Amino acid sequence: MTVGASAVGEEVQVYFLFDRIGEWPPVPSEGLRAQPTGSGTYRLLETPFFVRNVALDDVVRAAGDGSGTLWAGERVSWSGHQTLRVNPRSTDPTCAQVLAEFGVLGVRGEELEEYSLIALDVQPGVPLQPVKDLLVAGAAQERWWYEEACVGDRWPAGG
Image (tube, rainbow, N blue to C red; front, side, top):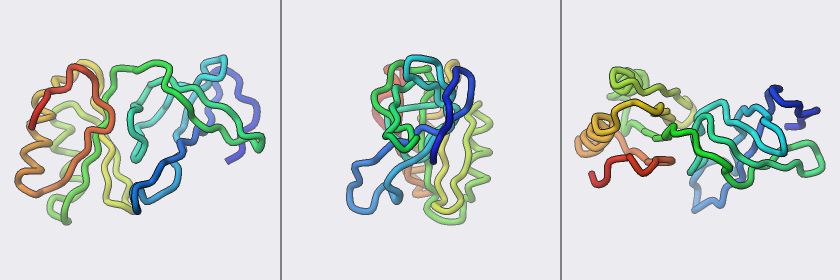
């Protein structure tokens, strides 16, 4: 995607290029909506489905490639949000049911229907142990697999 001027406050797309392992992730890159914050940095406005080690509201450095596409580099600051991914193993539970289960715990998320993949955003202040317990229980019951895509030091260990 080509972007025009990137004045502070204007929304743009920042792309992350993947080092794919086999067929995963199933796409070579992911574009995330972002807001320029100045000096080549951008605040992410959405939770990634495939990018690891970034979360909603993180600030990343990005540079254009000459064609107007912004490619992400390093993460400049972490927002305190945590990114989890859940993939139901069948249609029971459905993605909507999984989102509802985590919603009760104060976790927001959205579904990427094409891959039956859910990106969860755990906001700062949400109690983490109940979220971890639900993730682990669902995996143990073979309801889903999950990935801790971007978690902080407070994320409960083990499981």
